[in-house]
Image (tube, rainbow over all chains, first blue to last red; front, side, top):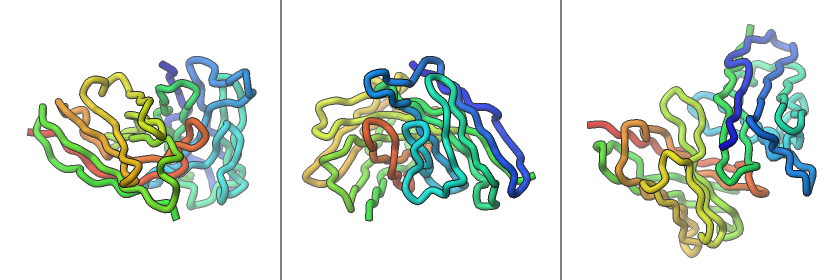
Length: 113
Length: 118
């Protein structure tokens, strides 16, 4: 099974500053036949279901603000929020779908400093 | 508008059974893989099971294999999760999610809480 590990577990960033969350997979999630990374990012606010932000590692879901971006390939990925807004306070999860047994990272809690 | 509405959660004793349902609307249900994802209180997300459009392929996380069964009724636009031999560690909010393009979840229900306790 593919294990997803996020860092840090929690993060405090000032409003307007950049926030960076990392995600590492125990094996590559890059599918060579189509050169796509099978990696997604979600945002979850308290009492709500998760919301899809990014898929294929760097494709922003429709309606997601462009301050959210995803990067990386193979086993190392990053979610970046370019200018933190108050409404971005949430827990963020990465997820691999390379394997038929999907898996999530443990989550990163993002707060305002 | 895509909607996923879960039901069937509740309190059950260890070793008991429960059947969760997810009613889908606003999209062609029979065209999508579907999944169940759970979240224990205060914990992270855990994928539980997937089912192909026609029900011919199903996948499970190791911890529920042999105890849980995912199924669907495309005529009723409904997804199900039959949970048997429930354990305390199965206590969680269970979400129904639509699978997009082979793996990411683009729509989620609000979840239904399952509590396994004596």
